[in-house]
Image (cartoon, rainbow, N blue to C red):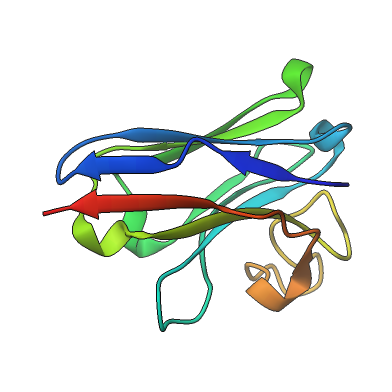
Length: 130
């Protein structure tokens, strides 16, 4: 799949943005959102599975970000509210390389790591001003 993330931009602290990740056939896949701030490693933000819509969030976005999917549109969204300057990063979406419908390992039940995702799109820049 070729993923395309969009919706980034400039927001003020406390503001909101909604990111989209689209691709043909995406409704069959789990989709993860990740971010990479300057000088930092890429980190997982949220993931929604492809079968039951099971959702995971990183602790630092719980209560602020909401992931959802519209299977009719083959699109996954990330609604970001109460934005903070530390949310500034390039945001990417990706799908798991193995067991592509699942955000968690079927063997361990643990969330998949960044390295277990593939098909990274170009990303979309989110900048939150203080």
